[in-house]
Length: 92
Image (tube, rainbow, N blue to C red; front, side, top):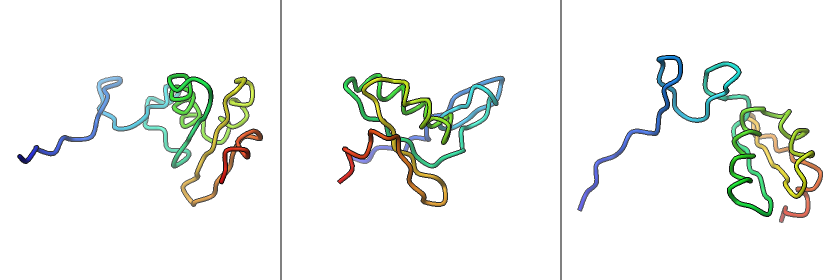
């Protein structure tokens, strides 16, 4: 069986269609970093925090430090990697 390809998820804000994560400050797609990963004791909260870090960009690394038990790892568009202080224990 062949399934038809679905279009990527899109969201509508202010009458415009967007794909990906929307920065509520600009009403545009968040593009400051390429990737954000958050680890912590609760997967649902970590997922929400990862979205927040992605929107905040590198500033999100400072923000996550105030979330007890959660750490973040980000990748910039030029391939640089940065992480919050406690994330080092998760690196292999």
